[in-house]
Image 1 (spheres, rainbow over the protein chains, first blue to last red):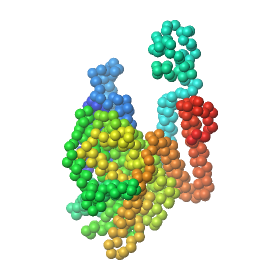
Image 2: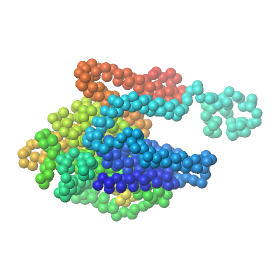
Image 3: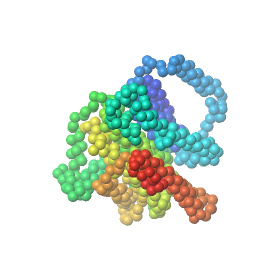
Image 4: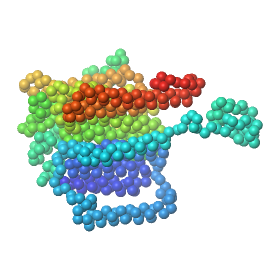
Length: 217
Length: 414
C-alpha cells in the first residue's frame, strides 16, 4: 500500500509540475502548482510527517499560491501569454543550460554519493510515531535551531517593513509640488490651452491644483 | 511491516490492529453516517434559518411544503436540480466547473475530524460497535485541528476561482473581497486556536475534548478572549452576516456565484451551510468540551454525549441566525480594521500571555508577577499600536479634509 500511495502521489506531483511548465494561462499554471503541493503533502503523510503535510497545505497552498493568484488577477495578466517574444535576449538557452546543469548535479549527488545527498546517513527507522511529530519538530526548532528560527523571523519582519515603506505614498511636504501653482499664466510661454488643455479664459484656482488635472475647472 | 503500521493517520483503537473486512465496514458506516447527518442537518438548518429569521421579522416564513414548511429545502433542491445549467460564454470552462467542488469537498471533510459522541467522562471517548472499540468520529489525525485550518484555506480556492472563472465583473469583485476577507481572518482564527493547543497540549480533536472532560472547558481555561476572537473570526471566515460583504446584494448582485445556476449554485449553497454547521461543531469541540456532559441513564448511555453535542451545536446555529437577523453589514474598511487592528493583536497578545503563564508554571516562577509583567508589556504594545493607528488616521483625515481641522489631537479622532 505504501508503494501504491507513493506511485499515485508521485504521478500527481509530476503531472502538476509539468502542467506548471506547459499551461499557457497563468491561473491554470498556479492551479497545477497547487496540485503539486498537494501531492508533496501526501508524500509527507506517507513519511509520518503529518505536521509538515498540514503546514505544506496551510502555508503553500493556502497562502503563497493564493497570493500568486491575487497578483495575477489584480495585474490582469490572466490571459494566455504570447510566448513568441523573449523579454531578455538569450534567456531561454541560458535557462535550458542552467536547468540541465542543476538536474545533472542532483542526479550525480543521488547516484554517486554514498552517504546520501546531504552527506548524512539516511534514517532507516522512524524517529517517532505520528503523534510525536509536532513535538519533535517544535523542540528541534526552538532549542537546537533557535537562532536560525529567530533570524528567519527577523528577515521576514524586515521584508514586511520594506514592502510597507516601498508601497507607501508620500504625503505632505515631501510630495513634489505642481509647477503651475507658483507661475502665473502670463509668465509662461504659449497659451493656457496649449499648456494645460483648458480654455484660456478659464480661471485657474491656485489653491486646488488638482482641479486643473481634472480639466473641469 | 504493513502499510497500516507506517501510515499513522489515527490512533483510534479500531485501527490499531490488523485490517479486516469488519473494520473497513465500520469505517464505511461512519463515513456514511457523517455524510448523511451533515446533509440532513443542512436541510434542517436552511429551514430553521428561514423560519427563525421570519419569526424575528414578524413574518410567517416557509409554510407550504410539509408540516411547518419543513420540506421547503427539499423542494428548493429539487427545483435547482431540474433548472437549466448555464455556463457563460466568457468563462473559463474547466475552472468554472471545478470551483463548486473546491468549496464543497473541504466542507464535507472538516466534519470528519469532529467527535460527535463517546463517553469521555469514564470511557476515554470510546464506544463499542459490533464488538469493536472505536471513536465516534470518522478520523482522528494527529494534526487534527491543523487539518481543519488546511481545509478552510482550500475552501478559499472555491470562492476565488468561481469569481475569476465567471469572466464577469461582479463575481470577480466578490471573489477578491471574499478571499481577502478569508485570508485576513484565518490568521486571527489560527491564533485563537493556538491558545487552545497551549492549554490542551494536543492538536488532535479527540485529545482536546478529553482534556476538557472534568468540566474545565477551554472557554474558561483560555480566559474567554480566544473564544470570542474565534467566534468573530469564524463568522467572518464563513462570510456570514454581519461579514457577508462577499454577497452584498446592493453592490455586487450575488457575489462570487452570480453566474452560477442550477446544481452548481446548489453546491455553493450547500457548502456554505455545511460550513456553518462544521464551524459550530469545531467551536464546540475546541472550547465547550465537545460531547462532554452528564450521562443521565445507564441504558443507552452512549446517546447522552451525542445529545449534549447536538444541543451545544444548536445553540451556536441559533446565534448565527440571530446575528443575521439583527446586525447590519459592515463596511469593507471596518471589516479590515477589525481583523488586522483588533482581532489579530488581541489574539496574539493573549496567546503570548497564556504561553508565559505556562512557562511560569513549568519554572516555578510566581504566576501573578508573570501575568502582571505580561499585562504591562501588552499594555505598552497596545498603546504603541493605538497611537500609530490613530496618528495615521488623523493624517489621512487632515489630508482628505484640510479645512476641517488643521491640528488634530493625537488619538482624538480614533
